[in-house]
Image (cartoon, rainbow, N blue to C red; front, side, top):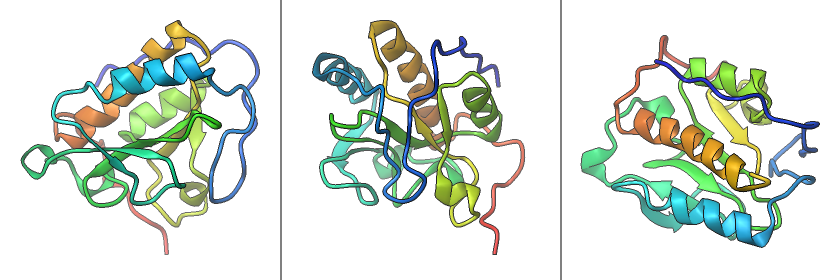
Length: 165
């Protein structure tokens, strides 16, 4: 899998360290948030639903059953592979192949979900930081498209991702 990201400019945004896992600084403007959601929900086969696992107002990206062919660790709950938080936050949670998680964190575009860090959910559950401008929307769509491909069964995880007991 070739997944390369540019280095994210500037300091990391502040996030909460527990559930709900939210971004509390460097949030998207209303226009940038709307642009990101417009592009995100235009991915083929994606159904726009209320998230089954996030805060009120979060919108889930869900695949219909015939297209949800990825491994168990490609999904958060049911066929929800990602969700976009409300505009006050602007970040997204999604599931990525482990190699993409490493690249995302190394280049400053996101972080592992604290519940994943603690071993309660799969290690490939991440927060992707809210885009701050149109160029960052394009990077975020690249990240989201990788999650979408993983959920569709088009990308392999190099090794099974397990929840630690």
